[in-house]
Image (cartoon, rainbow, N blue to C red; front, side):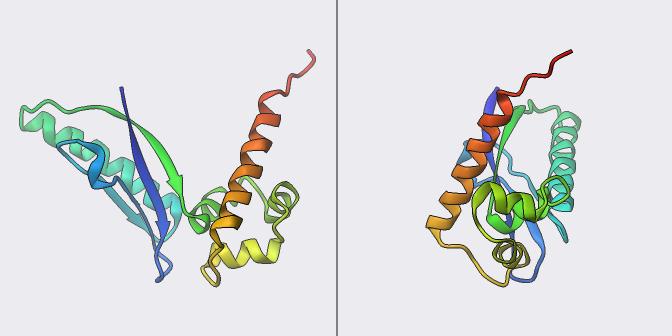
Length: 136
């Protein structure tokens, strides 16, 4: 099954969008929007299901795809804030809680170097978690 990029971004007005870029080579596109990153992703998935139903009703073949989600920093922090605290992210990334909060709320935007630093630290943390085994 084809893997399709989906970008999740926070707009300047504080709303969020989830969308597929135009260069995915599909006969359709899907977008979602909301006041939170979660709402935007839920709207995106609902729009995808709606597109599938539209194609079925029209008797057309619908190309099913898997999604690969890419977040801007604000959207990532907002979406995962219920799972990862800013204090925990500070320990993982080395970026202060206050700075992360500014990024999440749109008061500041991280440099490309800081984005790479956060992404790299999260990937290393994920590798550590993949090695966890519990004794039963």
